[in-house]
Image (tube, rainbow, N blue to C red; front, side, top):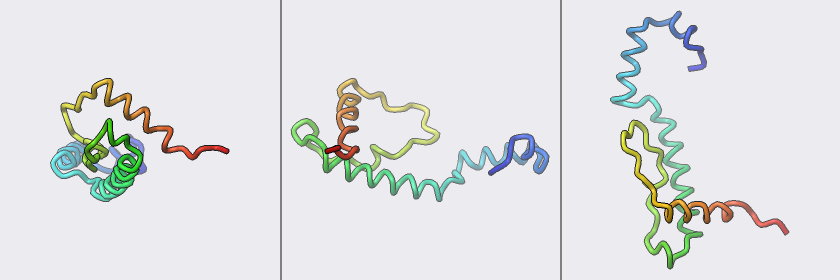
Length: 98
């Protein structure tokens, strides 16, 4: 919003702020931001599929694997193998220096 909490409370009541928080949980205001997140996730999905080791990861990655999860109470727990594969993909995102 571009305001400090104190500035915001000078413009609206605490009740209004609470109502906005409830509304945001039910229907997030960040719909424009979600479009950007989807576009970024699509790019990352494409890169991950292009550079994946097909023997170790035979199935294509899905865009949902790269979308941020908002208001999710139970994050998916990664195995150490999944974390290792993610770490192995990082160097592929940087161009090689010659």
